[in-house]
Length: 252
Image 1 (cartoon, one colour):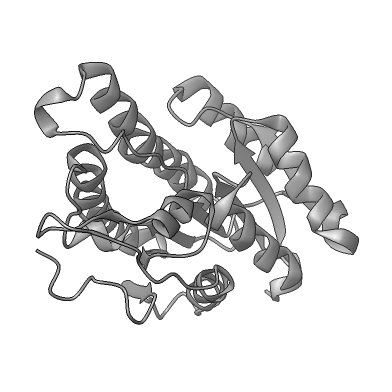
Image 2: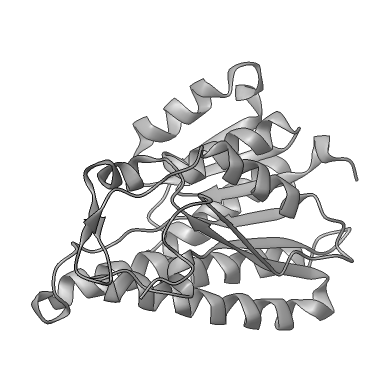
């Protein structure tokens, strides 16, 4: 199967890493289903695809809702006939406040989007990938450098990203007999809406506030493309890409 008839589904495709990963996949010849909560943002991604826009399918979806997730994958299969790649990218953080001040609602929202949403999408991807012909496919989970070392005041986000690592490992193991590969990309300081606040400085483990280096998000989209295009007998199990001088190694 050539890249030109492969099918990808990207969650959180209306902004940031998800948007640019989707555009990179479209540019590489994939048909891409775009999932996200905001229809106008998804339509903007389609518009940005230019002459590849006809190969993009925007599907407004709340990944925390099992019925909407089932509908997302059903519509993707109905349109494109199969599924070769799922990029579990949808995510959010809680306000950077002391752990003891977080509300149950703030905690639960992050867990629902970052962890439960990824699990629900993985389930539906398995159902399609193991039964299609040729069978199999690939799942890429968006982890984070926070899956290894936390920032101050990031308990919900950091906890879910550590959990994503567990989901990645379990998915990789359980997918073997179905020719389903699963890897994780851990991203540090890609220049997107999510990292805009870093221009004004963010809290460090030593109590100081520091402006952190960022990198062009295109580095991330090209890394996703690299992982996506491995043959199914090879897998980039974990890939870390980060701004070279960000304070990650030695964090804390």
